[in-house]
Image 1: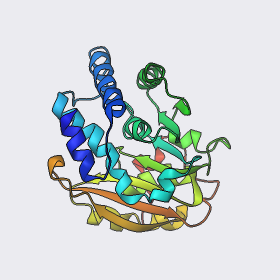
Image 2: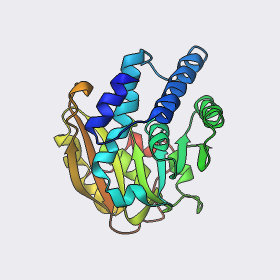
Image 3: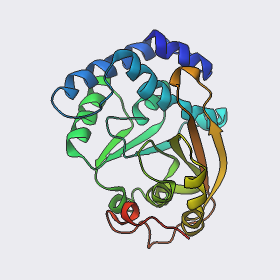
Length: 241
């Protein structure tokens, strides 16, 4: 895990032997399971270290040391897929309470296997759609941090994620490429969902290559019970002006 270890240092993260062992285990399980089910198209050893593991850890750039040290810090990863960014964050922050949400049962089966293999505690795996799970009192407005690397417009992501976020806490979207127009189109969704973009952080890690950003959305007021709309609607018809 030399590539990952070197990149993590640039984020101010020191990976010890136990961290490296867990990331190695993650890679091996990902590789084995990917032969049976489609978890990811990126499986090369070096590429996984960079584009999955290191990229997942970049969210620490927009979190304070106080937040990261909170013993009850809760994170939900929306559309986690094979566990990104949630599992890498759990590896370096074992005290966090982590919830992984994905609509594909095969992927959540893999995640439950992985969590058992890693002997993690404090991890909840949910099979379901964000549009439905967000209306459950167990998860609505319950989290300090909502994260998503899912490929969707900011307007769509804001509708799917902010209902999970406590007022006063934040949602962070992982984005790549030119995002100005996408951010501009998200104004209406932010207003309706009770959010405010407070930071757009460019990720300046050379090894990652392309332009990457962390878009930080603070939850400034409660979200109406009407949102998110029924399954599939946020992606088909994003909230726009």
